[in-house]
Length: 479
Image 1 (cartoon, rainbow, N blue to C red):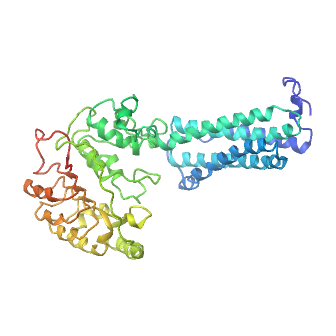
Image 2: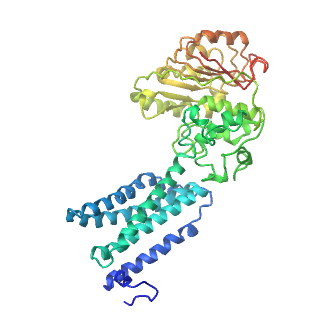
Image 3: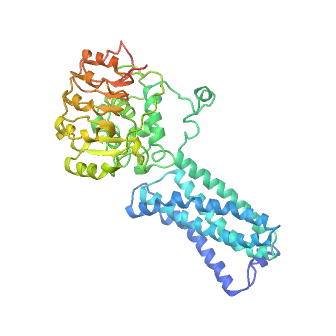
């Protein structure tokens, strides 16, 4: 095989004379060309595609760690092989595994992005870094025999060093894509944030102080500058209000018509539930802030909303574990199918308890249906009864939910009579009474509740006047 004239002297030793090896080089060049054309052959258009693609692609986070381990091991074996030659022989095998795992992780990542509708600069950069890493690993596989035979002493070490640099770049791109822009600053101490320009809020508006941090933590990973699933970006007010391919996600003054609020209040097992990808649901308090912000105009600049002010964040006592309900799961599943209300595990640990969800049957769920759940009461830590048909009579039943921490009663027929029956619920920290007819006299009973810290009274007779407390739809009781 003749050596191209444009190659430097001595480069001919890179081109093997053995026919089978020449075919391997030719096949490798074709594969490199295909890899370089991948972004143009499979376009990331931001639209979800086949569910099978997403199913297979979700193995990408598992597979992506394989090339990292193999590639880090290769130079270790090469260096150690100077003292123990047997180790150098194993380096070739590990390098082959590294290339194969790079190719596997790249394919799975592409299926995940294309199937899930991921798009944006961060996704594109991560894809190109994966392509570059796969090509680098392949070139190392091709160059190593010539280096091992001492025909070309420097090409393989240089390629291997370059491969390690590409690995660092790819890992950085993947980390930023997974954890988001605020990964390092989210829990940064406040005094330190003041010295970091991009970590401190640029405005004192309610949106900047309270709504944007919720979106940044829970939504921007999939709907930001890096990637914008469904054409939706939520990393700025203007982009949020612009909406995505399905139209606006915020309708100012109409929370029930706002797609964002609809998605975050779906049952976690619903296909359209957000945040997706197995991320935890928003806290009840966060959903209430979003609802009230939308209800009162979704302003980017208003510093206050109708209601009471949000006090300084206080640490709440750690929740007490509930008993193991595993033996009741068959009965819980039968109840879900028969009644329609759902008891969802908080996590895989039974000690974390259950969440009662009624969103799918809210108009048909009343005091009688709630009473049917008494057997499961000791395991329920949050009850979403918003927009149901429950009345003040439900307090007798709810008083037996001994581990209840959060209770939604918004837009129900509750007036507050008998509210004091909930006082024995010492773990109750959150109570939403917005949109009910609860009176100021009934709310006064809450002063005896031991650990209650968040009470929502927006659009009720008990709602404090703005002059009495400036800020938002939440009455926050701080102890």
